Image 1 (cartoon, rainbow, N blue to C red):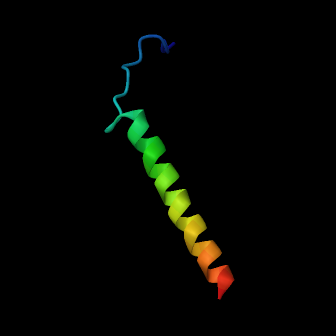
Image 2 (image 1 turned 180 degrees about the vertical axis):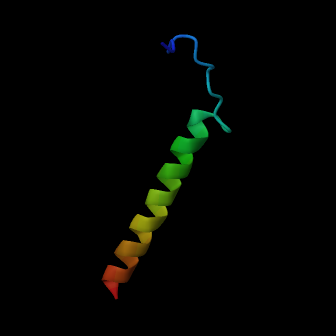
Length: 40
């Protein structure tokens, strides 16, 4: 049986804060576009 505790820890290509900021920025841009299109 394979032990899960012996699994090698995976490294992220960037710090978790970067992923949060990227997601926040992407959602903010999409929200801006939706609100802008709704105004027309």
